[in-house]
Image (cartoon, rainbow, N blue to C red):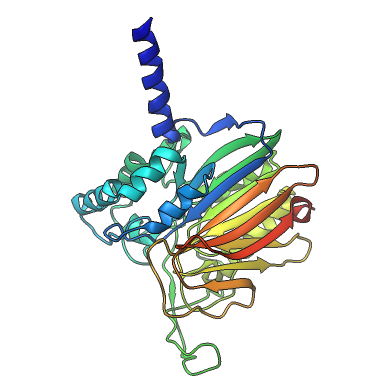
Length: 352
């Protein structure tokens, strides 16, 4: 009897320490569900932001890319850099106490600003899946790492759509002019937006999958995008470099009548909240949390910015309250534990 009890205890511990095993489950009767998220963590630096995450006791943590900085064409180097992260005590505590899901961006995918031409993309996928694990077994049946996670809280369905912004993306268009010295753009831009539709961010297979997912019933849909969706063009990486793809997404939300879409994103080394508006569509919020360890000297212009920027290291926190009038609280919390952005929207505001 005692031996059987010990075996059951060990099994329970195994599940708790490896939360990626089961991604579709009914949560407790509580109406509150907390989602922490972040990006851009250099594996060889201390990560006190992760300690602040654990203090919030979230129900889920989402890595949004640049989870390590590797930039390599050596699988041994890539694996070594993931192991450095695995050995960090802050990461170990996070993993032990909070379920984790993830997508990647360029520095953990393969190379800075890389897309479908990165030659080790298939091998990099295997390393990613080995490290993070993905319970959605369909991810093994297609190229790339796009997948979904579903949670049920207080009778409400939360759909997490984790995009792959690297495996299928065409080359970026080099900047074709110089706006240096103009108001707000006193820096050298890297990229210009495409003016034609003969390029892609997601690739047709991922677009087809995305449409099917948006047609599934859900009360709230969290879109995990490693690069920013809701900003205006700034000359760096973002959906704004592929405006036809950005419009395709908003058109797809409209054609599928998908309620409750909200983006979370990373990449830029600062935090902000953007609000994108399109005719015939409810507001699309994009909460950017980028800076577990990384920082940047300045925030680029963004006509859609409504909160921020926050330049210090931080993470994002969504607190979902499925009460009689469900609401979503969006926060950016810095490395000291101070809330720097705090905005609440009603779920009914994200509906047709």
